[in-house]
Length: 494
Image (cartoon, rainbow, N blue to C red):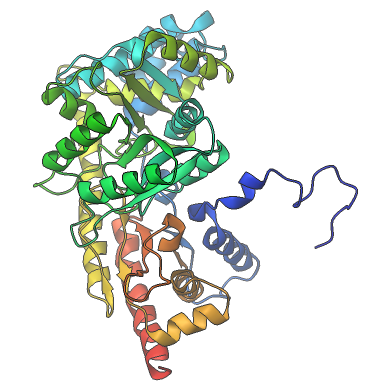
């Protein structure tokens, strides 16, 4: 493609940091899926499948998850306060939604949802979030430490802005990783210090491995400032044991690292022998307070039973930073003026939902539990399906919303991928999409263990568990048929 050579910005003059990172969940597979979808709209029946099944992105409502009624009722009333003065509103909306909306509207600037708010978010909504955290953990939380944000992503980026001073500053991140972290670190001029999760250990975190990576980074001249922990895991689907979390807390405290606790999937736990515990709760249970360890925790309304990705609501709770640092963080947050009010409202509702005795409690709990039980069933079904395939292994999905199966590919398939200039897992994912309409993300997009070394290299795909149970029933036979054909094709050429 030609371009204007006199343009003030070109691919050669753009910020080089932008060209370094990739974000594969919205990368080549997603673009190819969109092209196929457009082709099928223009030429119905042109492909051997009726639709694209988007398993590449954690986007619950796009895949059929219904919004929580209470959340949408309150949001509707807050966006349309005039409805509260109409008689028919009492027939259309539950009394508890009406009461909650009145309370929220009273706290909004100008009593409407179109005004700027405090840069940390509306005080009463932060109080609701702090109360929810305290109820969850059994330890106090202060609204002054809560920043409501446009999803967890903006909170993570803000944290990196605060932490990273130059390329000599490093941040420990798990591999496989959620690529938002590497992208954010690169864009803010820092250095990612990767540590490997243990696939054989159910994707747990081994402290000796993290310590090795930390020591190597320090020898290389880096100042490692923070450690990212994703629990429940993305893309790996594990839920850390309390013992493992205690080891991590002790390690970060001893090494003087800020803990960046990505806990956006805390409502997505599917197995009886695993429970979610926040890192703040674990640290406080060990007797450590704000003077002992610094923790920044992230949560979002995009996942869990909310599934409100497009509303961009979330929060970060900051513990263990001095008042002078908190003032600087507030200053940075004020650059964007404020988070969107719809996201603020939903975040407060997720952390302070209806209580027993409220008129809509039973319906709320029924909707929430229905979503959780269905996700648990889908997690087990998909993990089992992947594990049943030749040359494929898949750890159980304990939490979050993804399966991350490993593919042991034939040598001929790896050779064919190289001939097409692709990583083997991208090659597999492209063939899967073309044959079945199932869009998954290659594991190399999450910086899995490198495949350059045959002894240590691994290849994976990440597949969301979000398609409805009926769609998964249709999807699995197509997946199995494709995989058998793929393995047979390249086995014959080996």
